[in-house]
Length: 152
Length: 419
Image (cartoon, rainbow over all chains, first blue to last red; front, side, top):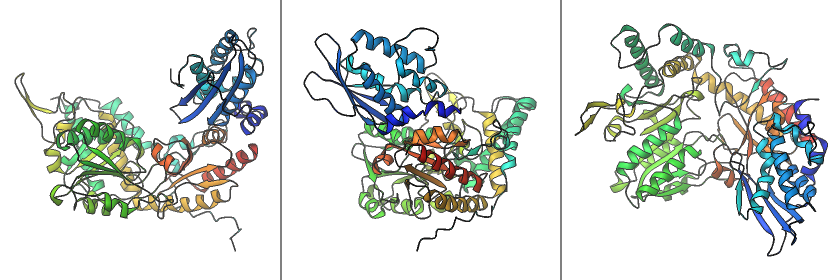
């Protein structure tokens, strides 16, 4: 299998074409954060609705990005619904380390589930930020920031 | 009736690929289709060898040493200035300043000339299709001096609207800074006419100054700064088959003489005391510190290579390929060219329905095709055309029709994959 086939798998292409939860959430309690990747100018806004216990009630996103950033946002929103705040933070950290090549999901038990599809990104140093854009926006929303960036 | 026959491959004007080591090496059984010359050009073997030889055999500092190595290096170093002056038909090599690249060249003018001459309410005219390097330095100096930036709009083909430019010119206009060729679209701007009009405007009608960003023109067409009547002309070594880290600022001598130093340091002074320091005349006034010596020598060899290869031939070669590339790309389903100005340079900027340019870039790389994807450091240009980014294939004299065939084939594959 060629390098890019590992990255552009059918699931990712499908989420790019038919993104899940591609919508703004309404409500005064909804946390909103726009994530920017200054490298390419792409931006994705994440909408987060937490219930009183801090569990993810609903998630949505909108914006402009490549297949990798859009599929990542789509799969993230689908995967995190119903998760607790602590779980979200653990998954973010595992995902972040995985795409940067610092964590091999095969090496130990983890909470990434089908998000491991994105591990191919680690081979593309210029695309790691695409995969993590929505995640940075989500973390920004949790921190009550209006904007976040992939530049750390 | 549209012509449905396949476009005919042009007969190559030049056959020089073999002079470029990276273009002939084997990438795991794959050839490299290098279509990113607008970002940076590959280097002919003689540039690489000259720099290597200099470091191995005759390296020494310049303008400081009294030993033979240094004297020889100095002579070669100053000779490049004459070669560059000859390339652009400058009146004197004293008008040729070594910088680190186009970006520094423009910053030098913005800080030194702008910092001395701009006043509150003065106007700086830029075009809508500038590289960030010809926008941001002006924004910084405008803010500091209280000057105002005005923008020449472009039409849907990416051509500057000259009537709008004429309306922007006034007694308040102090400098007009435009590119010769747009890096994002390939538009060739009428810089001679832009300069002529600018020189009739300005305070008391005595003429505004004109800076031309020549980063995308210098290696692709003959440039005559005196014919253009450019006050400043800026370009980079690495986009003209030379090394990185070296660029040129051409400036008319009387203007350069009126300008203060840009940076202070060694080699730009006449006499230093703690009470007062006097400066060298141009060009050395603007060249503080030990310069990139090997890069200057490499640039000299690149200039020599350019003149021997022939800018007219390079231009003809690239234009034939541009025409061919335009035809084969227009056949790709869902492909839209961005930037269709008449007589444009050999740059093909495009979008592909349903596929983000970054995905195009990554997937073409799989076929050994190197293109640029993104905003090309020209976000106002992207905004004008309502796209966040484009994919851009830019052509050099070492390209041939097979590179464009590979591109079109790759794009079809990607289009199908995303359908």
